[in-house]
Length: 103
Length: 193
Image (tube, helix red, strand yellow):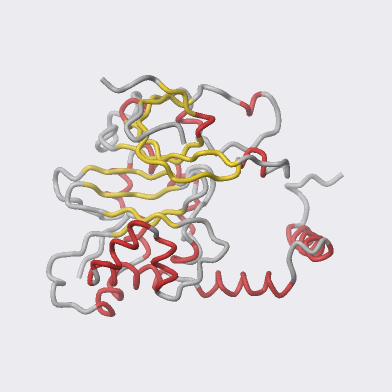
């Protein structure tokens, strides 16, 4: 476990889908987005390898919080309360890049 | 050549079950037992956990710390299932669970997911405009309540521990459990007496 609660991170802006067959548990809408580590959830075999029956190393999994208004800046202005919620998502550590301490 | 998407699913399932048996990965008895367990699970199980959490502070702490252990403590079999996380609603914070990637759902304690939980519409809208989704369900949150959408993407499964509604202070656990619905534990609705 290398990321602590409160750590500022960014989800990698990576698109393995463009390089070939893959199984990714990181949603498209979070790629490249900044977030905050909420808590460590445990270590789990990497689903990207499990899906192809490859040996799968256990990887740290975190609950990461994101601000909705940063992710959906173009949300329909007619929508009720766009961007006032937050999102909490399970993300594996190899998808997270540290951004330094929050100011 | 038939593609995977065009192949008859019943024949593919039979072939996979046969292979699992031939390779001794599992047995027909184990598969039958797992199907029976999934069929037995229903929202009433989750509702009984919620009612006990409302009436038993020690159980509530256990449930928030380790949902699967709390389920097991009530005789709900969780062996072989993913860890269960429990999201506690408060007067300030309301949780809504979605799986944008597929249909991850706490089947061990809630049974099969409702059809709409797997729909593209719910999955796309829950993360983008949850307040609009709640409004369509007729769910009214107290002013100032923040919505937190939990996108179930990986190895955990998530259920919501709703806020105990006012007016139920003298209700016992069975009566409370009968009030709690499936949607209350996903977060699209809130329990009301």
